[in-house]
Image (cartoon, rainbow, N blue to C red; front, side):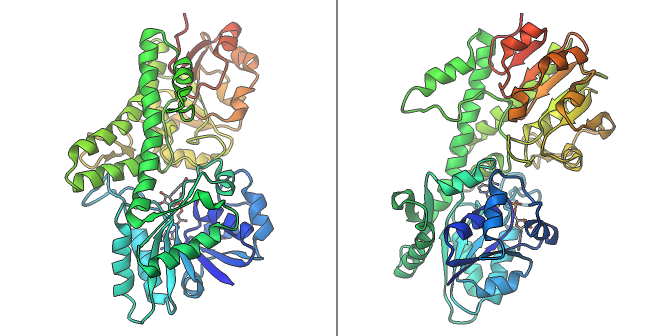
Length: 473
Ligand code: NAD
């Protein structure tokens, strides 16, 4: 029986390994983490992350061939294949702060693998890492293990999207495996291919060299984010000219060379990956003497920041140039629907911006807890102009002006304006007549995700702002 261990039981490690366990009943999968609370949650009825379909997959295999444990050393020692799916956030101090990937978790995982291993292993980079990381990992592994055993490093980046992780894992567009072009390297590639081949069609399993696989993940995220920034840049021009971004996207997306996906105007992208991976790409370009290429990718983040501040400015300007002491409802805090993840969510910037103008916020999200929202609102903020690209939240903002409530109606009650910041399906079907009646007048809706029917809301009496669409009279 092939034994797999995955270090890191997060948004990637948990779902990915659960699907491998489900699809490969003859493989034993142990997911380990240093975080006892997270492992306890994986072993309970309330999983640590919200992801449609995940509960069902975990229930089918947990205790059979899928295990969650804090016994990191023991599980790694026994495994044939060790996936490393630890977090690789942006460095906040020292060389490359604010841009480079922080590989300290990766390094300590690699040192641990080297220390405890007594048999040869395939070590798989599942985390998103800078190109050439495998070279560093190889050094750490071989210099820290004195025995004759061999380590083969593979790059197998994960392309799942939160909110659709299980579907993405069941039917991936592709599985990418990068390995050394030596006979041993190719043997390791084949071993990992054999795992995925249990459910992924052969033509969807791509193999490349290590560096191409590592760079492809950064490139894919950069391209996706770039599409969003491109359409958002157009949305600003649409608002200035009377064009409608939905119509422009539809027309542009009909071109088969471009395609229709990822072309919705919005308040901006969020999530733990897009900004972090582009910053990392920028850093790698700079380190490789390619400042012009770095500058190109920087603009993707700059437009995203611009879109968020443009949204805040629109809210304030529409509400007679001040939101001071006005109650504003925030509907949605997660960075996208069907997840409780708030990492880099645009809602943080929008809320901080509104608090900066002394607004009173009433926030509702179906999956994000009050503690999480309050922690996020006091977190550090990305800022190109700051020497470390990170600055703390402005001193003038305070959590005293933030209330987290249990539904959209309570959030909107007595408010002057409603900002929709996550495209949760339930926001499409709210009783907006009821919401309108409970609000101060004029009642504003700022749809940061273009999910509501603006014309219907206007008929009720709302003043509606949608991203990239003609403004209300
Ligand atoms: P996460 O923070 O949810 O999970 C990482 C886990 O690793 C944490 O639970 C942490 O406690 C654990 N960990 C860290 N060091 C450890 C160690 N030495 N031993 C044991 N456990 C350790 O992160 P995530 O969202 O799952 O992302 C993991 C990686 O996958 C990142 O590199 C990310 O860029 C990449 N990725 C994420 C997504 C996504 O949608 N979240 C998608 C594709 C790729």
